[in-house]
Length: 193
Image 1 (cartoon, helix red, strand yellow):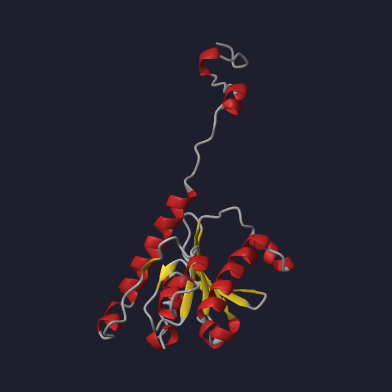
Image 2: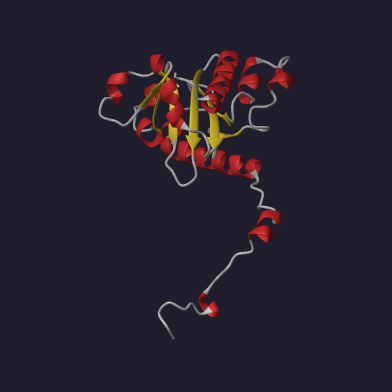
């Protein structure tokens, strides 16, 4: 065979017209979100296991029924019941934070943070801020992109920034983002009243 001739058996040609008409597999974002929430619940219960065992009747972490979307249905309930339905996770009663969990959202472009306009992130932060205002707890957004580590956003005023000096972090508006794993290394008093 001549070097310049191509054997047709060696070619793989995709039918681009067929590929255009095939439907892409739909991602079940609800299932993905619930899975992410369960992962975070497991991490939190493991991290605070010893502390919670010494706190009678404090409870533990679990997923909130409806993942925080039931606030309007709880307006006539007592405060402790309302807190149960605020945010994505049910937290022990003396936990300082309301937690909003986001899993995926891989298209969010954090480079836009440098222009102070990241619409998707702004929406997440508004959601946790609204939950915080209703529950009178501090806001914390926990976010995990696919195949990446968990990060969290907390208000700069809610953390001693000196504790984050040697850590990778991102400042966005009045929020600071850092590794969730690193934040969990803080003493229990940071998280509980």
